[in-house]
Amino acid sequence: MARKVFILNGPNLNALGMREPGVYGSKTLQDIERDCRTYAETLELGIDFRQTNHEGVLVDWLHEANESAVGAAINPAAYGHTSIALHDAIRAISIPVVELHLSNIHAREPFRHKTMTAPVAVGVICGFGPTSYTLALQALANHIKDQ
Ligand code: CA2
Image (cartoon, rainbow, N blue to C red; front, top):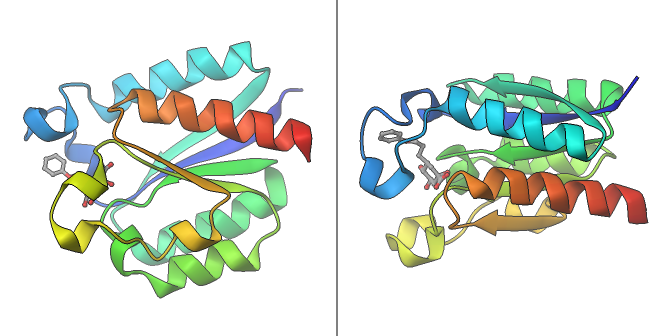
């Protein structure tokens, strides 16, 4: 069976493709999931792709990933900027976690420039639209291989 990675998505990403296409592009989260699934096959990885609007659910899923996956990629969305709980959860688990964002958070409002999660992620990818997801998968696969 293929090794599995979790791809976790935070609040409001369920609205992708429906509003603000200028910032986030016109793909829906389902389109992105399909792209990730296709790309993960080339890396011989299985994916568990999920979205929630709830901070504690993301914490629970990180702990679940630690039990059943070899790594995780997370778009924490707005919780990345605010959540000490997500920072602590990533610290508390032993699998590698890559943070990703669709938009270039450094080129946006100052409150988006920092994330609580970046210091505990193995790395951060942002600014490439939906391609940020497949780049994060590639980076995660390479990191796991090198471990
Ligand atoms: O660029 C990203 O991927 C973000 O994580 C997206 C978050 C934002 O809070 C982060 O600063 C950067 C927003 C999630 C999606 O929000 C939507 C808002 C309007 C329409 C559709 C989605």
